[in-house]
Image 1 (cartoon, helix red, strand yellow):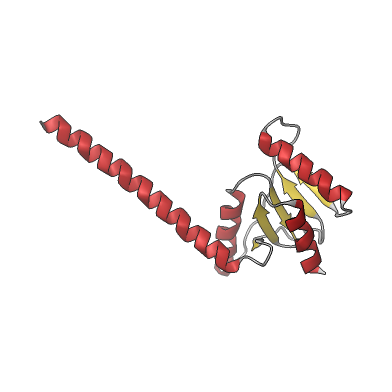
Image 2 (tube, helix red, strand yellow):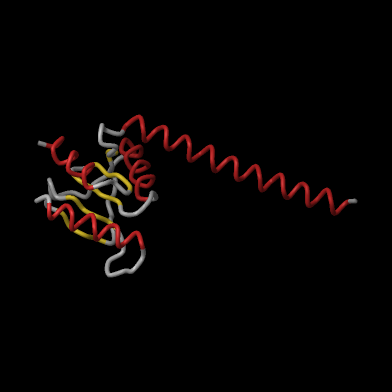
Length: 141
């Protein structure tokens, strides 16, 4: 009888953790939606001297994964549309004050999304379409 209580307790803890993680993700998604522009791009931390009007398409390079193949196809489509882009497999930026913590949280949330990630003019989106990236270019003009 005692072991059944422990198993039930462990299951309840597991369910609680799952519910908490789901809740946390929903809170982050609501916050991101509130700061997203009309194309769904979110303001993020960018490295000093980042190029303007160049879409950075983040995903593993020279990789057969579906995500990397989507990134390659997106970069090719952006090139076909005449939009400057660059493929990359990493991204780093840092903050210089605590006031930038919300941007760092946005950056982490977007970079944790579905690959490829596209960064353009200080804004990013997980797995955008070529049309969404094109619209983001137009919004910057």
